[in-house]
Length: 113
Image 1 (tube, rainbow, N blue to C red):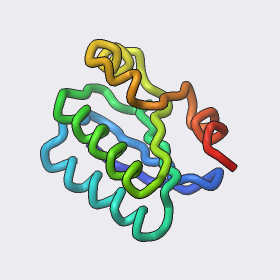
Image 2: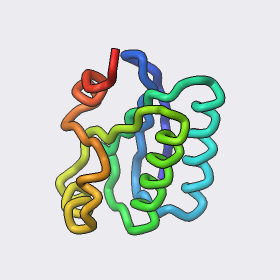
Image 3: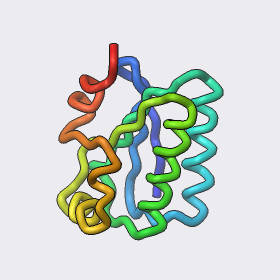
Image 4: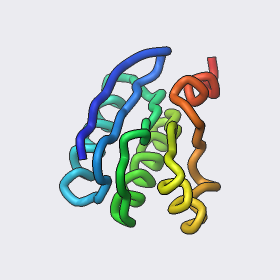
């Protein structure tokens, strides 16, 4: 998995690419979120448009990220959830936990001003 961050629209866009399998990637992802919190950047959009596959550890990584941001009174939304990932969220009932949007722009629009 590759992680790329950009800042636009007053939020941090975290693009995940490849296979989200948890493991070593989880530490990198968590470290990134904690650094963002330390820098007072708590409006985070996770862009999943380039995620090819996600397993249960990858889902756990996303849940951990949501928990981390909520504890920091931040915002954490998913964008560009592919059909395959959406099915996984529905099957696991996590679709009710995550706010998810069809595009990064729509996710940003949902953030409080």
